[in-house]
Length: 173
Length: 261
Image 1 (cartoon, helix red, strand yellow):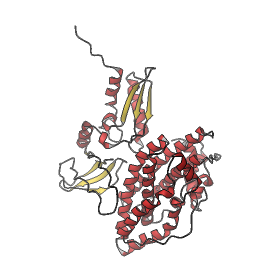
Image 2 (image 1 turned 60 degrees about the horizontal axis):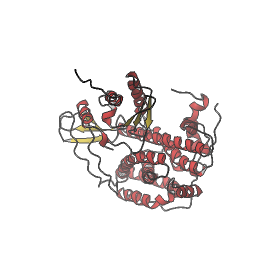
Image 3 (image 1 turned 30 degrees about the vertical axis):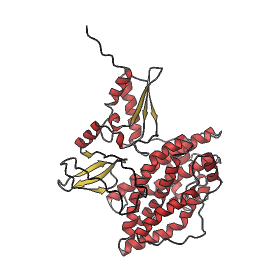
Image 4 (image 1 turned 30 degrees about the horizontal axis):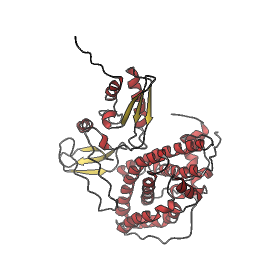
């Protein structure tokens, strides 16, 4: 007689969250993005998913909330509530290794580790030099930033001098 | 036509409105650049910064509306606060409502405000109001990025060619009289400081001055002399420009109350 593997509803919820993708980067799941902080099984049988926003004005936030509710309820884990928790603020350091690999394969250079900001932060010249960023296509380190901002709040535009291709960089914050 | 709402005079609500409205009106001004910036990268940058500021404004106005209700007043949501208040009930700094000017003026204003907002959010991370502290933890990262970006442009243009340097210096002369208002403290600040909601804005003046002057010096610009003039947007007495901004920003909700996408 085999022992049935009993998957808890909580494990199932996390597994479902592995399939809910960020609408702006539709290869990385919300779980690998590091924005799901907690999943709580409520007494009424439903689930509460605690999510932290990436950027204050990210227009994907509402879509992500709805996708989470739809996916979990479709799996019979509802009723689902999504709760926003701002503190502690999301950092790209919470992105999983798998998420970083998926970003790179998708053509977006993943964020490096967040460095503590200099105490005297700006000044034109003595900015902390960004670490060389590898081109997600050819791995060359001969790259340069062409725009501090990109198509979405989380990305900047870069260019590879070796293969000549422009690419996006997921900014470390 | 949707009737206007009025908001509680409660100092803590007013303190939050000053922050939320300053972010909101600056966002509205930056959004004017969409499709008009000198290069496409800056077009994207200005829209991105506007979006961050709208996000911050939404969070702070939502908190202001809830706080008003907690203190026994009416409950207003972010949309009601943004779209149904009259000019006199807005509490933004006069500096953010001034016309966007040329690219130099926009970048200089962004630099002045991002530097101020970064210092403010840093203090607000320790606010006695947990929700405000949470908003600040996120916003400070965004403000820091805006500050770096704007500082780069202030130096690039200020220390650029004759034309760009003259325009950046003219922007500095034009905007400088409105900077003083940021650091004027009053009873609302006193109350916020006493309850732990947030700092008196006057406490941020010295740190702001150091960071601002460093960049101005690197840009080879001349800091104008201080004058006694004080603008009064924080108290609801605005320049002639705010009414026009609101007319455009509020038109849809006033004409089609409750309209949604």
